[in-house]
Amino acid sequence: MTLLEQYPRNDAAAVLVRAGLSRAAVTAWLDHEDVLAGDGDYRRDTEQTSRRWRIGADLLAVLPPKQARSDAQTAAAATILERERILRRMFLDRHVETLYRRLTGDFSKFKRVDELVRDAAAAVPGLVPDDKQLDREKALPQQYKDGFEIDQGLFLSRVLGNAACGMHLCHAMLLPRPEATEQRRGFSRHAKLEFEGATLERRGRAALVTMHNPRFLNAEDETTLDGFEIAVDVATLDPATEIAILRGGAVEHPKYRGRRLFSAGINLTLLYHGKISYLWYIKRDMGVVNKLFRGVARPEIGPDELAGGTTEKPWIGVVEGFAIGGGCQLLLALDYVLAASDAYMTLPARKEGIIPGAANLRLWRFTGDRIARQAILYGRRLDCDTPEGRLICDEIAPAAKVDAALDRAVEVFTSSGVVSAAGNRRAIRIGQEPLDLFRRYMALYAREQAWCHFSPALIANLERNWNAQNRAS
Image (cartoon, rainbow, N blue to C red):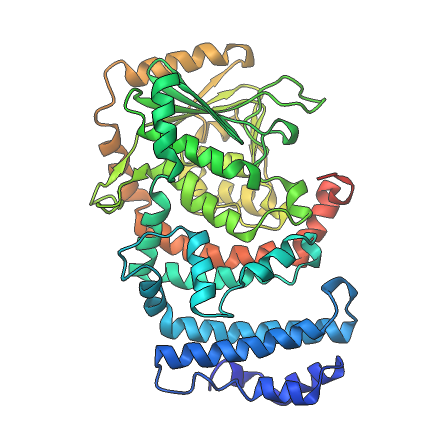
């Protein structure tokens, strides 16, 4: 019995007809449910499933927009989306490696996740949303989206769940951004670069990346991600520096005006208003965050620990004010954390309704299982200058003396050279979190975060805990 056969066709038909959909159109859609009953031929299955998904899309298009649907129409939309997703999972279980090989020229081309899903939409129409579907949804508040991007999550989860495909995709996401080549030349000449979301400057033997989103307390969003990742690429690959620093810039909010803050995490205002895509999470954690943890890869050598194909250097994080959510996640990827004595860290996943990046994979290594669960599942705050906070923070300094403490830390790291730093980092990782373990974690994360991102609970949490309705985007 297939997954679709476990849900009676007659029940599905009744739900759709009750919503006012044509019985003939509903019957035609349901008659295409057995399209994967054949011998598993990729070309045939692609043609048949794409035809089925086109019929389903036409049925869904007859219904009013999500915010205007009656209860019966809401149930019909949910039925269509659910049954289509079962078929997508069945198709991917059969053909994910064949599809990935075709998209990448049998692993000869590296494609980042955004390019990969775009090409998958063209190769197998209906498997993941195309640009037209994404553009329509992009204009809507989060609560009014149908969640077509969930299908991107199902696709990426299956890709990452396949060892060969998943490791290749991890490699692709660890390669330097194409823009980094030109920016490296500019950095070698001027020792300073400015991006939307971050600045990069050379300070003696250190490359300093400063996160910059002053209106939103250095929160991360679609506007900051590209610049932040390019800055990390250039800092990591810069041959004139031996160590890198990650710090937050001064902000504009009246409560903190002129103060440095590390990061407020994901921009919850833009999330509520539908201006953060699902792929943002995947690009962030497989891209810039993983580069902080593993270094920047080269195309000709695998980035796993045994191959040793990454360029990397130690990273120092400087926590001032707070490291909330994604800010705290960043600290778990760094080698040394210096914190102001009045700073604190939180992972408010419970209040947001999402998964806090790779914190579930990493936090317990610092704090132990109990504190990690309290932080992630219960929202426990960790003040930096406490025994629990010092499990993450290596050094605490009075807020007025952070700059001096940072200078000392850089001197300690670089006084004897850092020639062994890359080797030591790899040796630590292979015992804690080898790349294949990260791949497996991301296979689960890609699926679960997609459901969280479009969950009604996310909207309810943001309205209850963050007064999201009254925050201007």
